[in-house]
Amino acid sequence: MNNEINNTIETEGYDEYEAVTFITDEGTEETFLHIMTFPYEGAKYAALVPEEQADEEEPEVLFVKVTRDDEGDAYIPVDNEVLLEELFTEFSTLLDESEGEESVRI
Image (cartoon, rainbow, N blue to C red; front, side, top):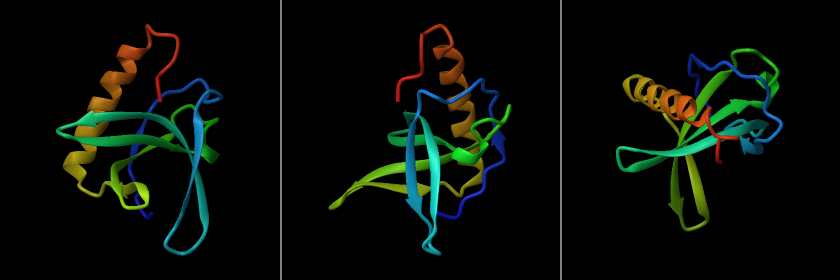
């Protein structure tokens, strides 16, 4: 998983989010906090924050496409810059809408 995205969100903490760990192409583990999964244009995407950035005021947000294969869910990094911007806009809208709720559903 080699994907850099320059989108950030303002946060107050991530205690209630599920941690997920991915194995990189180099064989190292990277842990992310799963913020939400949402549909966009017929596909499903997950918004993730690197665990080491959880305490930062504006952590980086990474998006992966969630697909299903023979072994279960597969997570594909999004590389298209236009799609990344669209996903961030959709994510921000959903996050703003959820502010009235007690928590974001994951």
